[in-house]
Length: 85
Image 1: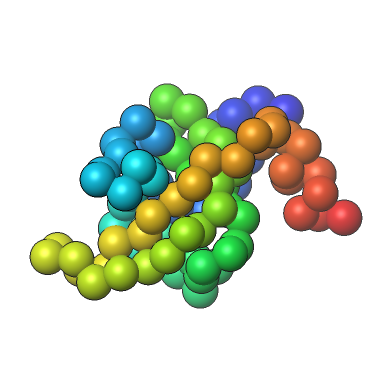
Image 2: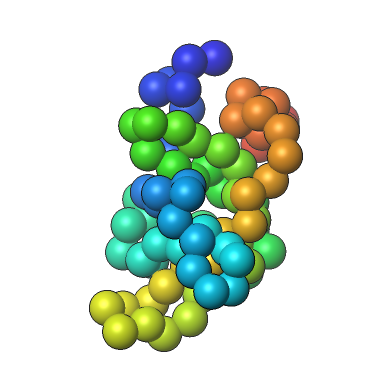
């Protein structure tokens, strides 16, 4: 499955880690914010790359709610198949 065909749940720079060691992005970058809850596995990334990520937490930040993501091993295509099952 091509990367562009996979639904993106939240836009994130997958190399942008903060002091927690997790990738972070703003909640308002989510296409469906209701999916972004602690423990959920979502597709995160951008046009440059995407991967499954577990939502660690959503915390107050200076520019709005911040989402911390823990990147999950495995392919996006495998995750998409399991999500559709």
